[in-house]
Image 1 (cartoon, one colour):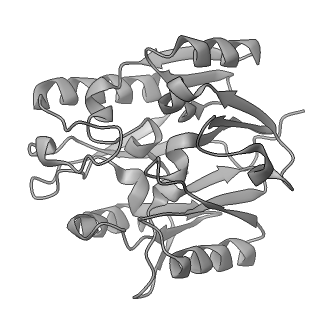
Image 2 (image 1 turned 30 degrees about the vertical axis):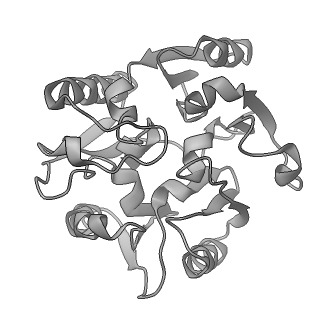
Length: 265
């Protein structure tokens, strides 16, 4: 029987698209956003989908000085009632964190990462009793060590991956839409990297790698990016009810589904 006790979701934090979204960082699969209005509409559709799945959505105002500010996942990691406030890996994004900390402090204990640590929340994936942590261009060894210590003190195990240069964050190519299930992308991670973790792993074809980033709910729904039929079919075969969202304009800024949300309760 699936145990959702550690991943039930009621509240989620999002932030509106910056008016300067076309200046967002795009070094991987994105080409850079060009249409702010279309990006705002895509974000509105995303928020509506979260609400349709029973979530109470807190929407923070956009930050004109921070083009990447809609990607709230990177600013904090929630660990058993505490919010670890991240030292973001790209220097241009540091100013995004203060308002996230302020919003989360109304609901959770906050833990600020010390100087010298570097970690993006997109490099952390929650999976049952584990936190999977990626060491990447945005997350350094000290950031991994700090995150591991927090998780261990709160009763969770950790598993560390070296994020390949082919992708930005661990969560870009790995997600857990339900207890006991991981979705990951061929050509980025390898089966032997998961040795020691008990999981039903759904391997997304390499050409649909972007769709490995999913959001699942206890009602059996899973949200997947639109335009990846093989992934949608694989998830349907595993018993999920699949909802697709057009993420084209978000992808242009190297963003994915999970990047836009921060579950905090």
